[in-house]
Image (cartoon, rainbow, N blue to C red; front, side, top):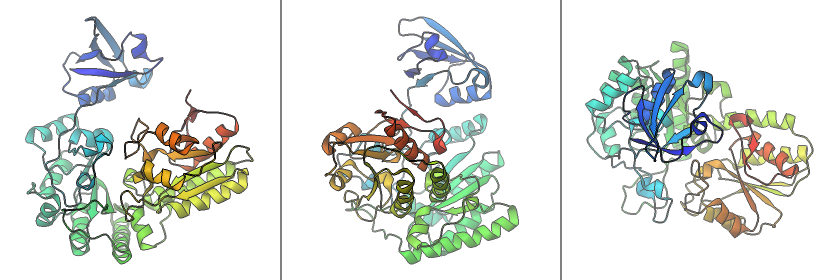
Length: 448
């Protein structure tokens, strides 16, 4: 039975008298198997939810999200199905002790793929799972392919997995849309193997909506793990050029570029980024595809809107990869607002110098770079460095703990230019709480 984990204030669930710990017994008269049944039912239209309170009372809540909006409750999250793979590049295997506990969970769950866009290999998909995907029309799904060559894919996954192409074909034939990714490991699934994989997957377009090609991520904690090589600049250039050649072909043939190279590949290759239009619907945004192009568009809009402000010195931090773009934007924003804004590129001593993205920075590395902050300074932390719905860094240090160590105020913001401007404006107005902004600066508010 599903349990309420959280009730949103001033919601229909709150007004109905529901509270944390109450249980959801039936959805339209049937016992739900898990979260999927609840969300799918609410997506389809009006739904009757029957709860049992901790005191044993029955509460019925009629929900129509189109007219009444979100009912205002969050159900306890289910434990994910565990991954049975032994991937050569598995990030969990590259973790030291003492990290945030949730990082050690190896999940492989088609439900999370549908709900949250988590990538799965489908190596543990049962016949019953497949039937449920079809019955509930769980589309789109996000699938890690890595290679369509069976031998190469099995080597990468560290196990004998079901052939991926027949499985993908079955899914698209029953109307399931798919987004795919390939994590490129030099000498294993690049070159002709990559070229073949792209071509094989394109044959299932347009049901396969997009394919992201991303570089393998290697930390310094690879003792007793398979010997993998990081991508060189030449490797990255070859991949970018292959992807762009495929894009030109597919755009002519089918009206979509289909395959997209991660921003990190362009940075490693030293190649110019495509215009934002080349990323089409930004399907692979969460995979680091198109983020820099979108940042540049948003940055110009922010600079057009920015006006003179007065506030304390503000620090921004980022990884080495994004530093050039962020520092260029901040220099111009400083000129527009008059605010002393400083950008620090944080070297990732914890994971190793090969890791250059902001999302993998730890509180320890941030502290090492900003130990000389003035008490009146404000440090803005992008939310990608913290756990979703929490304020915990990868090394299990909280935002409050970092604030105490640095001796200055530390605020979490979303990772886009509008959030930076909104934070500056709120600080200038004397606000003191954490700023939270919607995508592209929409619906910004300061939480009290």
